[in-house]
Length: 139
Image 1: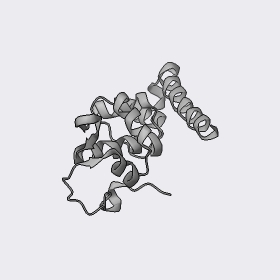
Image 2: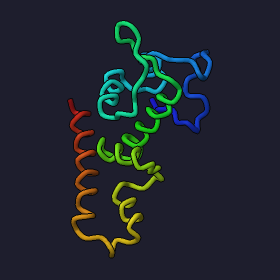
Image 3: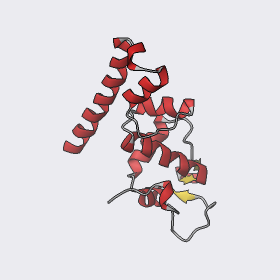
């Protein structure tokens, strides 16, 4: 099952108004992301704060859903780690299809201007992200 992208048209075609609040179950089903992952992302990304009602029920606003789509894109399509995705969201960096190493090189200008340490850390983060995804897939 492929996950919908913003460019695919309306993501949440559940018959509700675009500005309606949605439960965690509705968001999880529409975006193809498990509920426990959404709850984990709430812990990791301070800007992701759905409304909570009595009993702790979460209600996601349209801006929360847009942020979830962006986090999903950074983590699963662009290959960012949680730490890298936080930095990208904080700095307003938009992914452009480059992997984190290429993006770092483009920011500086060229690989000739980078020290080994500056290239090594993004590479390590990128490889650890791959390792974590593979480990999760094997569990």
